Length: 480
Image (cartoon, rainbow, N blue to C red; front, top):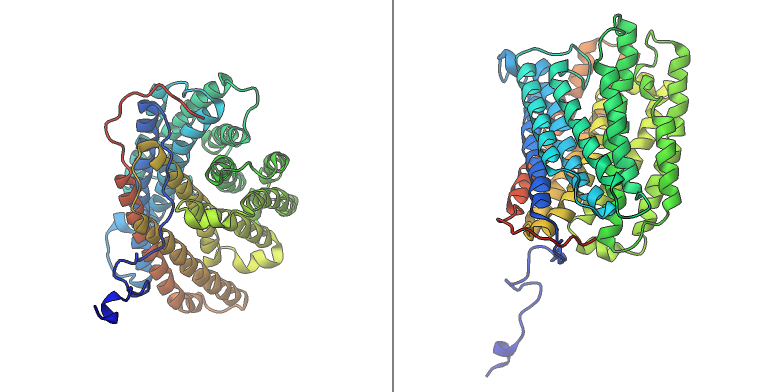
């Protein structure tokens, strides 16, 4: 036998070498009831569906910035599709995704089954009905006026608010019947988010006291920022307080930091909405209060981010071997970056450059996408395989992560640069068309980044399909 025939193949050149590094599989299978698994998965499945629908509208809008003559149909106009994009992603994808995870986390940390699975299904159909009705009305040109994120008219949003109340009651009763003395910090955030958002919806939609432009402006500033700060932010932070230590198999670094972040979030975030209307006709003192409280937001953001990163300290090998923890790490980093960026944007000196430009478009995507969406995806990939026993293809999870992250960075950086130039052009007194012309190359990069992001959503929907549960037998065990 010659020497060549006995030589071992190169590990680098071997055709058996995998294209990507193998990640650790979920391993443990959670002993959860059939009803729990079906309910949680259904919320996740609808969330993935609305993500594709909502971002398909956003993808088409991004292309229209490059090819504005692509169509001449009224129901495909920017004024109709843009609110479809934002509302479907807010109330369809992100909200249902967060509630799906909450329907698992709250019973698990309370050591009880969900109070009522029937109410869980009722809430799901109410919220889906709200998104369907609201979307059809928006496409038809029936909306609540030019009020960002509350373009749904009150009957459509009323269905969503009713679904929120049903879910809040369901989770509250679960916590009230808990088998442990303490209320875990995740449940503080989750239940508070529901209660705050029910109040927010009432303030934004009840008629009678918003009968002039100034009052509408004040309420609009409150609503659009509280939607992010008192619904999406506490929900995903509360979920992270469960999934991060669970997936790392270690306790959260500091319970006290979590409590500090919770109460300071409630204190400071409730007053910062008016920083969206700096230099507007609303009272100057109200603008100043919003700026001061925006600076105060450094406290909960630093406390929360520090708590998560200190929990991860020494566990980077575990994160590298996981396909869900990289999403959570990315979400935590973006939480800090966009929150600090938001504080800077509130200052009058920077607000006059950036506000109403494409810079704020970048900021909102870095926030809702880099922060909220990545934490939702991390929770979904961390939970669903353990519930259903079905692993997603690891390669497609990796493709989802990198397409979403690189696409977001291309999208965000391009619009931040272009938006800064846009604002400076306005301040210099140049003709408006000049700011449009200088944005053209940045809108091309927006379309490229947006395309990558949309492709990642298709892959996420495919992964959710691959994780679908089989017909399950009822399981009595409920391990914590």
